[in-house]
Image (cartoon, rainbow, N blue to C red; front, side):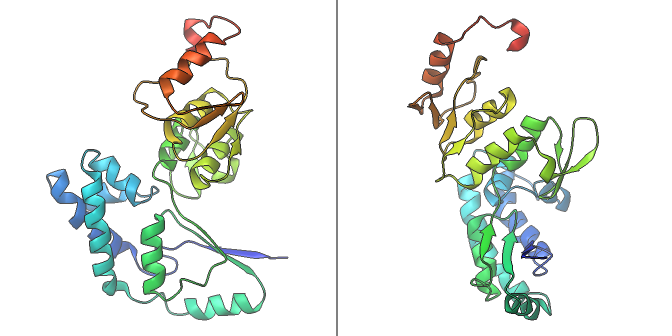
Length: 254
């Protein structure tokens, strides 16, 4: 029995992709120093707008993001309605008592702008928006290639569903998506733990034992609970881990 129906947003609820590309190009190109091609824009898809912009102009992303939101809202008149039949479909599914979810790679703010424009801000029971670093997390942990919100290519070249992501990856993504809910990461492996420290600055990750050295290069902040203590400084955490190692790791372990 079907209990839940999930929708994507861009290209599913409405024809928003051309407008997204146009707003992104106009907002980010001045900071990139050249006019972005469609390919350059599309290659950032899968992240939310913050991650997309950071991947192209990491030093000036805040200014570009501000301009993007302004342009995105102004250009939305080019796509002011959802696809024909979508409102009727939503109403029919609702009448059947089904749970309606929206799962999108868009960020929370751009998602809200689009739903407001479509007058659909109250149509979904659950809304899951994208992450600025999910693509990095999957590639970092799985050592594969992130494709989209549904699939990835593993290290052996097989296309797999996101449902088959490792438990460590799922734990990291849980911290990213639900930063106010502490996530138990006691059984994650080395790659997942490293990703937690590297990417998850807004959510608390609970971990127990970690018998490997922690590489802190390029990490400015963390938020980790370890053996009852909370660490926000990566260097302090690395030193604490080092002092508590049960053995001296071999070079290949590092």
